[in-house]
Length: 323
Image (cartoon, rainbow, N blue to C red; front, side):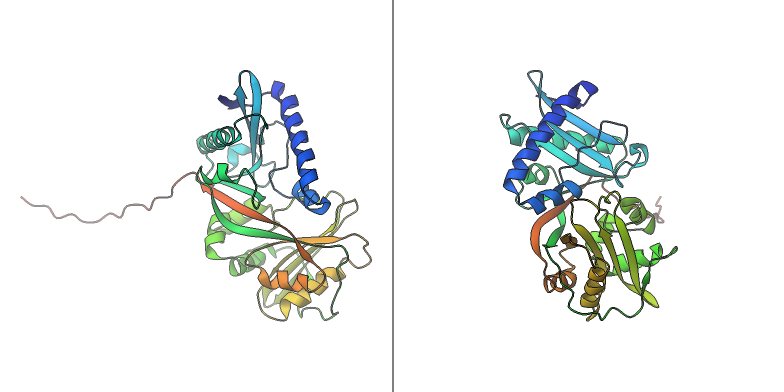
């Protein structure tokens, strides 16, 4: 088996494998879960072959039997300046030795990413995904869990909204980063965004890092009480996909419930269902949404691989001299 960079002649085969995997996934997952996997940064987003993406293929007896793809964060970032890469896709042909091919592709991508100056590789994939061992055995470790909640007809429980709620304005980004550091465990924030500059680069100004819906109607607000203690973004969908809600909030009652009701008020009049993606440490917001008609749709694991080990600088000191 040979692993090499993908070329233009490989694109037809890559797209064929991608479409085949789409069909299998659509049969295995409920429609809403399938839609979510297409619109979030999971192993499902196929980007064209360009300088903003890395694609490597595994070839056996002259036939492509698997491929792996990664891109800079945010998606589309010029890879020459990317220090963090997101694995977008890993697919292996059914007839191939899937474990061996997948492991070889992950290993090759890791080596190539390190050579190009990347420090970390991230991947988001569904719980119990058959490709999970290929990442774990090649040094990826779980650092967070993501829960997607969904409601066909979400229901507001109250019109009591948080004190200090206002639209987001220019200059709020640093305040939002401070809120991110407060609500995010240190072990997670140190991996994702230990500095404001890395947070901006990683998420492109939007903390959740989701792929935005084209043509969607967005409303974004913060809860400002001298310091920012909450954030909500509502996206009304103009297409077939559901409306989207994103949250950050300190776990201080009654803030989560009031923020959830305010977010739903921004979607008032919409006939579309709604979903939200939250981390395992956002249990206060998950509970608030469950009390408003949401139920758990799926769970995704967030994995990371450190490509470069950061070693502390050796301290200099005076050494006694004898003789």
